[in-house]
Structures are given as C-alpha cells and as structure tokens.
Length: 299
Length: 302
Image (tube, rainbow over all chains, first blue to last red; front, side):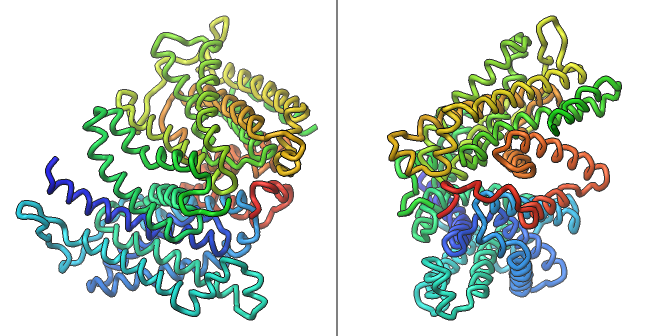
C-alpha cells in the first residue's frame, strides 16, 4: 500500500468521521439536554437528502437549493418536536425508543409515498466538481474536501454557540437542570425546540452533503444512525468532546478497516470484520469503561 | 381466561383446512414465543434489549444450516439452536450487563449488528439475500414442519410450554431476585446478592427461547436471511411486548397476536402499511400509556 493511497484513505476516513460527528452530536445533544433517545434522527438526515434532491429539480442555483433544503428540514423538525417529541421528554427510555422507532418507520414510508421507491440522484454543484492534487500522482475530489470543511465549520459554529453565547449558556444550564432553568424565567419549551431543531439541522446538513455521494433512498439514514449511536456510546453519552473523538476514530477505523482486514483475513472473514469492527470496538470500550470514554455518569 | 380462549380458537383454525389462516396462527405463535422471551428481559428484569432479533436470527440460520449437513430432526436442530443462542447470549451478556440504561439499549443493538454482519458476509450462504431452506425440520415420526398444520400445532405446543416455563420462572426464587434487582438494585446489593449472575442466566434463557421461535420462523417462510435479525425486527419485538403490556406473560403473547393481525390487515388495505404501523406505534406510546409506567424504574430513570 503506497503512501498516496494511505493519504487518500485518511481523507476519506476524516470525511466519513465528520459526517458521523454531525449525526452523533445531535443524538448526544438531545440526550444531554432533553434526556431523549431519538431513533428518528436518521430520518432527519434522510429528509435533508430528499429535500436537496427535490429542491435541486426546481432551483438551479445550488446555494439556494441548499438553504431551501435546510429550511424545509427545520420546519419538519419543529412539527415533529411539537407533536411527538415534547411529551416524550418526561417518559422512560423504553417509551422513547418505541415512539421514535415508530416515527422512523413512518417517515421511511412517507418519503416512498411522496417520491416513490426509486432512488433519487443529486449532482454536486459545478464549482465543486473538480479535483485537488494531493501528491503528484494522486488527486482528491474537491467535493469530498468541501464536505469535511463544512462539517468542521458546523462543529466549530456549534461549539461557539454553546460556549460563547447566551443561548448556549441556557442550553448547557438546561442540560444540568431543566426545571431550575425554567424557574429562573427561561422559556424551556422554546429552548428545547431550539435544541431539537439544531440537532436536526446538523443531521440534515450531513444528508444534504451526502446526497451526491450515495443514493438518496428510503432508510438511507438508518445505518448512519446506528453508527452514530455507536459513536455516542464509545465517546460517552452527553459529551461533545467524546462525540468528536469517537466520530473521527470510528471514521478512520471503518475506512482503513475496509482496506486492511480483507487483505489480512481473506475476503469473507475480512469483510465481516470490516463491517462489524465499529461494533466490536464499542463492545470493547463498554467492557473496559461501561459509560464510554468521556462519560462520567451512568445514563 | 383470555389466553385459554385464544388457544381454543388457535387450535380449531388449522382444522378448517385454510392454509392462509393456518399459517397466520403459526406466525402468531412464533412471534408470541419471541415476544414472551423478550418480555422476560424487558418486563421482569427491566433490561431493555434492542438486539433480541440476533437470537431469532441464530435460530433461523441453525434451521437453515443443519439440513445442509443432513440433519433434519427437530430434537437436534432445536437444542443446537438454543445452545448456540445461549452461548452468544452469555458472551454478549457478560459485557452488555455491565452497562445500564441507555448504554444497555445500544450495546445490545451493537451485538445484534455484529451477528447481522456475520450473516450478511457469508457469501456462500447468499450474503445479504440469504438462502432457501434446503429441507424442512422433521418431527419424530417423520411429520414435516413444512406442512402448515403440523407447524401451527408444533409452535402452539411450544408456546404453551414457553408460557408455562415463564410462569414457573417468574414465581421462583430466581425470578423474584430478578424482579427485585429491577425494582431496587441497591437494596438487593445491601442484602448481599449481586444481580449480575441472575441477569446473565435470565439473558441466556431469553436468548435460547427466542432461537426456538427462530427455528419455527425459518420453517414458516422456508427461507433464512439476515433480514430476520435486522434492528427493525428487534424494534418490532419490543413493540409486541409493549403493545400488550410488559411483565404479564399474557401481555406480550397478546401483543404478538395483535401485531401480526395488524400487519396482515394493514398490508391488505394499503401498500404503505408500514407508515400506518409507525403511526400506531407512536400513538400507543403517547395515548395508551397504561401498563407501561414504572417499567423502567431502576434502569430507566436518570
């Protein structure tokens, strides 16, 4: 394996890790602030991808379609929060798992009802269609680099929001004790809608950007959701730092694993190990640290 | 009693000579066993497993693989399936049961995904597509489970046996410790009892029982594929348990009957029945809340 190939895979792993981070951060925020397990989070990624596919058919300017897709997801997120999620915050984990699982089944079928069973395809914008020379022999798609950059920017923006703004302070306080924040005169209802919309937008951003790379179809968000859940558990539920570290680790392990394991262990066993490696890692982490790398309390 | 009435109806249906309804009864009995086995964990032990389909799938694959080696006898296939499932239950339970609450939900999901990817990766067995059962499971005396009537009666008998075992288990000293660990783990520990070995034993029993349902399912659809152990199936099992209210033994069986009925009914009416199933699931949680509360005391509350 050449140095150039390793470099290319490292970029791929980084990009995959950052998309996972966009998913995982929403899962961990929703749990940290609203105490909500949200299995419908993959649906938000899928909706983002469908919305950009639909918007791109009507709007030729990519930035406009991009914004339109995110705004449509935000509307869907507000509706979902008000109708289904809000009553769930005070219920047990089992109820949350079942209700959000129900939402994900329903949304998966709803997109089929609207857009049909056939996969949709989205073209990346022309101005991101080129490649960048990594070394003299190896070039890398500009679009994939852009995904990594946008995801990193979104992560940075989220960190600034949480660490440096009044809203962020309220969100962090809400994660500590929602009742007291409410008693101090903060509108907790609105705050929770805000957190849910931010979470959903981050997932949708992942979907919007993945659209041109993978087929846009029903259930496309589910494998990513399950990986994101693994990321959250590995990193420690509620920890943003944990989510970042675990996302990058999982992204790299998964990407390199798909290259390395089949070479070492042969096709069949190698592919199985490559597919299951993240979950094996998760089991190992839980065996050593039952509440994840950066989790300090049992959730 | 409700269960007795259901059983009476179930026993009469296969005699009517309508294969569709006979298979429906078999399907209900199979999922009844699966839901019952999950209820042992969710209802009695407060352990919300989101990976129970793994054990179902292990049963399905054992029923598909053993006939390839020329083994068709039920008294070999069922014990092997249950043993393999119990072993994987022990292996995964050893680690999973160290975690609690949210972590337990996701770690069980991870262990199920591992089995799923093993099945999917076995290309000689059709990989993602799975494979057709080479031959059905045979009862002593040569009756074949490929015959819907035989299958229905066999699975009904297995269900009755499972209900009996579950009831005995819940009344035993063992069962009481498990329930006590769910309700107040601290107090149990103060009494000098560690819940861990009890939970592990229960986890293995529930795994084995679910594999039994898997063997039945393989014979019902005459097919084995990774889809039988996907996370959606795990979610459906949980739905069955909660639909009928957990920790009651009758409940999950009822839940399975209603779920299978609903599935058939909705899919007959609309192509998009999954949409409505999802809606029903959400409504069940939001509006029909009786019988669920207090279920997760211990593991569920922060």
